[in-house]
Image (cartoon, rainbow, N blue to C red; front, side, top):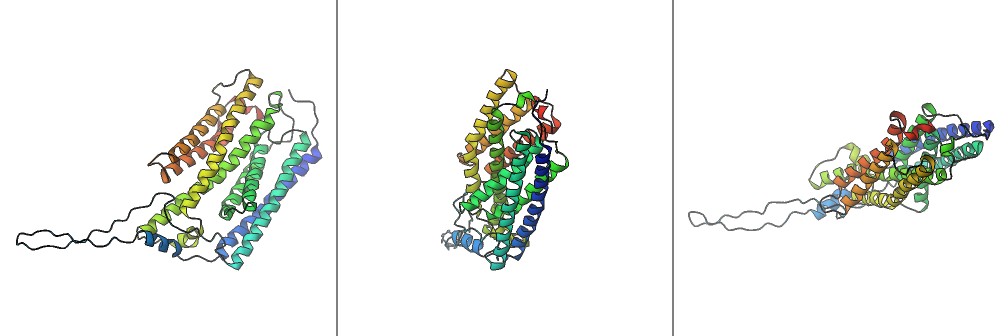
Length: 360
């Protein structure tokens, strides 16, 4: 049964046009971000290496007398031992950023941010137009969820920039991901603007799905920081053990924030959003009680939402547990985010569940 309200086809077409227009501007922002990294100075390995060398200076020689058979002594030097510092303990400066501190690189960076902000406004207008065309929340199917998700992710990134947080390094992976997300949405997930089935016609649609979208967007930012942390941590570890990083490390990884900074950022955003994800699951259970007469039925979407919750709970617990900080905890965070992605794409596309009523 479809609700009787009519769809405003003109607004629906305007929404489609705005989404495609945002993709064009995001593409320009993508190339501007590439230019920011390319034309920014390629920082030479030195800042991080110097800091790590100072902290891992060889211990002074210790004379040990060993009585030989002839009554003589032998002098032994205490072997040099390099102990890898725990996460957050390294005194390593943050990199200068994507632009590398150059005027030309910074110019391209500012252009990239301006284009990203413009694309965000265009895409947000498309989402709003979609909502107005059917007079409901613009996240009733996977196409609408995808467009709203990418809009919120970019909005969160821009909000961090306005708050003067050092997150310009997220720009390139973010815009790349947004283009992929919108490309999938308009190619495979496109659904005509239409009314909702009765089960979705509830105020809980505004509450439950909006919080899920916001949580996913912030979890994404944390996942990007976690992945970059693993690369930067390997780079710092290689320097600490006397290794010689390659050209990629010299031109990219040296410009990222220190591993400890990336690790702290990912932990803070994941920890901050975890209570809201808990609320999302609770709100979904309440909505299920109203729509289906039961709060929990081990539906595939419910199960994977809970698995995602367990994954992030395990990550936060690992961060507080001795021996599980750093890389081990980072792996758990990435697995948790992979569970979130499967919960959205995998369950909706490949698994039959009650949540399939919205279609793709």
